[in-house]
Image (cartoon, rainbow, N blue to C red; front, side, top):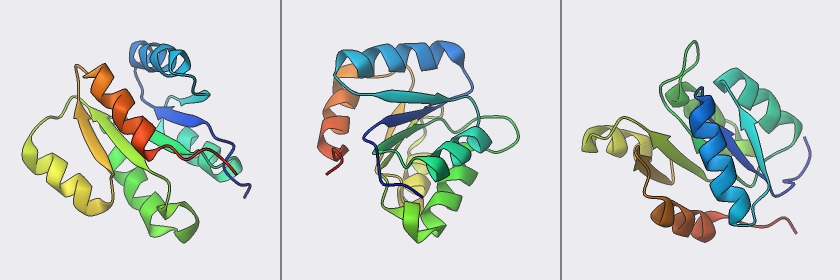
Length: 127
């Protein structure tokens, strides 16, 4: 496993959401990579550890819940900040995700300024 290269990994099965987040993040000066599934994301995390992850929950096969659980169970990846970006918006889901180790939760449609502000708080540039 390599050290973080400073990119933000966007994990969402919606191409529209990925394009939007990628545009917003690059405008904010962040390097991004996109994964269209949790299994693709896991391979990318293992190969080149991201500085931060924006994670959708509702994806086919492996959900964002399962990916978050898998990451937080591995010491090497447990420290990567994860912001959940999901259409689910109930407070109980947000509470469960925080208990699972998510750093924050944003429901869609996104509050882009709020999300960017939170990213700037959690993002740690590689040393």
